[in-house]
Length: 169
Image 1 (cartoon, one colour):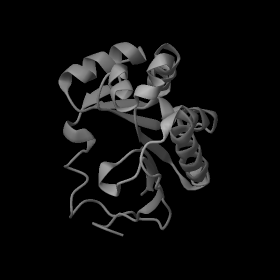
Image 2: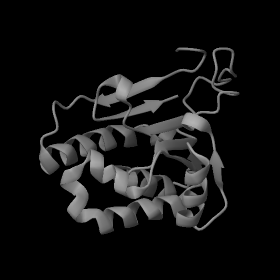
Image 3: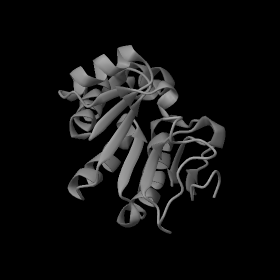
């Protein structure tokens, strides 16, 4: 529990990138582990990424509100994951579908707010620099009043040195 927020970290520590099969395997393992937390989760917060499609779909089926953090346009994922570039059209569709299902989109630049709103087909897109509301998430921020998690974050976080991770707060 750091800064008053209880945190559960599920991390997939895959080694160096090992092609499509290795990446898909890591995504599948961390997605399966994350799904075990859905019953205790009130909100799902995740970085926009084609690999988050299953998380977004399950959240929609379970009627869990979702917030997606947009850090770039679809094509940027293919710079990081060049093996998936040949599937670009299908993977971009999957990401666009997630934007349409999202309760809100949080973009790290004003330009991505406009782009995200267009892709999502709704006006629930907001600018929050670096994807975090520093008015709420700060050392003296609000404390959880109940002992169970209230949000699930799904996405890669470089400071965990893993290819995929989930943080439940």
